[in-house]
Length: 193
Image 1: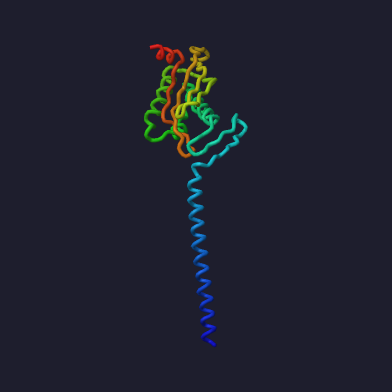
Image 2: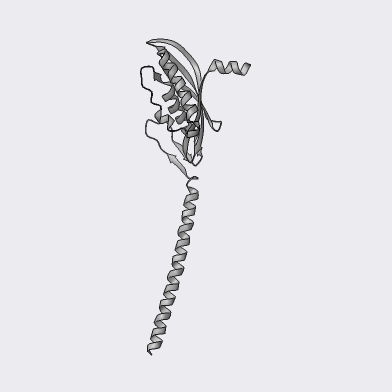
């Protein structure tokens, strides 16, 4: 009798052990599968950002794709911080340089510093009024607008300028890979030749 009880109890424990093992393996497979799915969905995730009141448009970011309103706002921020400067003001370009990958840092910094040096050396205060954004070409933003330059309170120049920003989007992050500024007449003259 004792042996029968022992065998029944032992069989019961063996059966429970097999059930627990199967459940543990099944749950482990589910966890690994969910981890894989979440990892794959991270860069395909579409995030809609409803901005605060000072931003004009809502935008979205999805992996390596962004909305055109996001590109317009980034172009506006870059143009504002590079082109709206005064000779006596200390330039704050460090946050722009944080958006530049290491392989492009030297060329982008040189382009920004050339513009800043021109303003400082000539004692110029300049204001840029953005009027046009071109975001259609992948990897390039163009901001068009009136650039007014002043020395003291006298306006010395007011002309249409275009700032071109080359960029990359990697995992939802905006990276500046190049910046250039050209006057509207200079562009037309190059196209005629």
